[in-house]
Image (cartoon, rainbow, N blue to C red; front, side):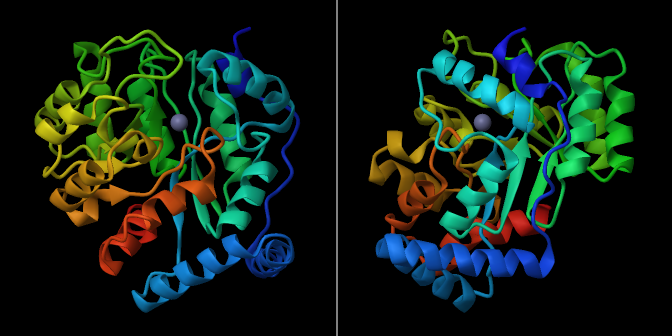
Amino acid sequence: MSASEQATTQSEECQKPFHGEQVAEFRIEAHYTIVSGRSQPLLTILKLKKTLTKQNCTMIIDFHTHAFPDAVAAKALPALEKIGNIKAHSNGTVDGLLASMDGAGIEHSVICSIATRPEQFSAIVEWSQQIRSDRLTPLASIHPDDPDGVEKVYQLHKLGFPGIKMHPYYQNFFLNEQRMQPLYDALSETGLFLVPHCGYDIGFPRTRCADPAKILELHRNFPRLQLIATHFGGWKLWDEVEDMLIGRNIFMEISFALKYLSREQIKRMLNKHPSDYLLFGSDSPWDDQSESIRQLEKLHLNDTLFSAILGGNAEKLL
Ligand SMILES: [Zn+2]
């Protein structure tokens, strides 16, 4: 079984995340721990909260994270680390993600699971329903080879899923393939958003299965589809993103991108894009959530744009 397959196999029941008041209590405690250990992160979080409160946006939402059932995480993470030659910043479990969120002052995360085979659909849906809470929104995943893909979109809609995650490299498809059209139609019809991996992938040869040209084609052919382009429109294809996608009404989730780009290019791209189409994401555990917030903070964007990216825009989508 491959790492990605293990990553989505169902395992024993996950521990339930924190709820309601418990969340608030836990968060205060977590912040207190941080202040006694390392004062700098807390100050950053408090400063950030102040800015956000001023803008009537008190929520930081991470639109791109990954987590796995406990037993799966222990095996999947080392394997995925090897594929991408990259080190994880948490243990890959739901508790690990929640702890990372508490440390970073993040209220809510979207979890992007990937079905690497059509049969994994049900296990992902079941697990997602178990872990769904006021702090976590798990997305489902449909495999392009699934003959019942369209039906499943409607099923997910009924179950209250806001969207699906797809990954052209792990699911072996090109974004603009003809066979994908019925699925895109169903997503457009139901209003479920599509979060595809965009651009190259760190663990795969450089095939253009989800490059900016294909994203633009998708946007043009399916104008009602709520498309969320990850990794700032296309990992390691940002000049093309700037040429083709910036300025259009396509959601851009900005994980795993800022550290590769010059400050000038990031600011130019962020400022030229419609401000309500930008979403904060970290790709946790593959990047550190606190560090991802700091990268954005260091750009000194105006307060309105900053809080819209960090949570305001995502809040409207979820
Ligand atoms: Zn990811």
